[in-house]
Image 1: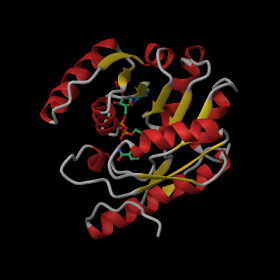
Image 2: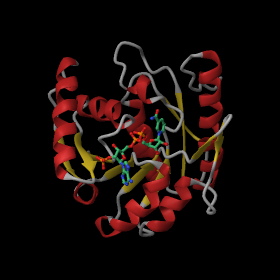
Image 3: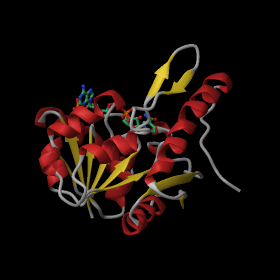
Image 4: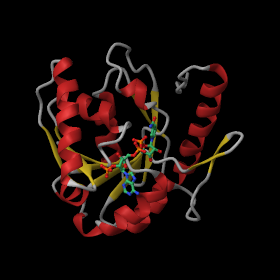
Length: 217
Ligand SMILES: NC(=O)c1ccc[n+]([C@@H]2O[C@H](COP(=O)([O-])OP(=O)(O)OC[C@H]3O[C@@H](n4cnc5c(N)ncnc54)[C@H](OP(=O)(O)O)[C@@H]3O)[C@@H](O)[C@H]2O)c1
């Protein structure tokens, strides 16, 4: 599939890019500028080579990357997600859009800070055309874990969304990354509950100096 990662120059995207290129997807790294997209692509391609991955990884501006892909992953900082997507909304037709976005407040403890709509995922659905199918996923997978190819990702990925076919695609993309397991939790309104687990994990990580994620048994 053609998969773009908006803000794909950031830390969260790297592991996803390499893992999906490894299994034959065409991956587009999106950025606000072509220059930064090219620089990040060159760097990630080097890291991919170290893993024996020679797949298709190309850098583009965010709007061009979204337009050219079937699946778009929003790897943007929560506070800039809405404005960025509004600015490139004409690039969207009927893509599947994956939201790992977690709006948080940083104080004595890290807390969930949802927008008025209820969650980042619903905010994203609200700014994009109705024909776009938003699926929430990957909020609780640490960027460092995704980019670590020595240790298996023995985690569960809770997903939600309003379109079963789109959730099927996201489940397959998830389970192509060993050893992640996707669990469908229901409609998109569930997203606030999934997003809210992340600050809990971050607070636990800080306290225990560990990298927790989640697994349901
Ligand atoms: N990091 C994690 O462990 C983790 C885990 C789960 C979920 N997430 C979620 O994944 C998303 C990405 O996280 P991240 O840590 O990769 O973020 P990040 O590194 O802070 O930012 C990602 C990219 O966003 C772009 N960006 C920065 N400021 C912007 C602005 N003002 N307007 C538009 N674009 C801007 C930059 O790309 P350009 O400069 O190239 O445009 C940057 O490389 C977040 O929503 C986060 O909640 C992260």
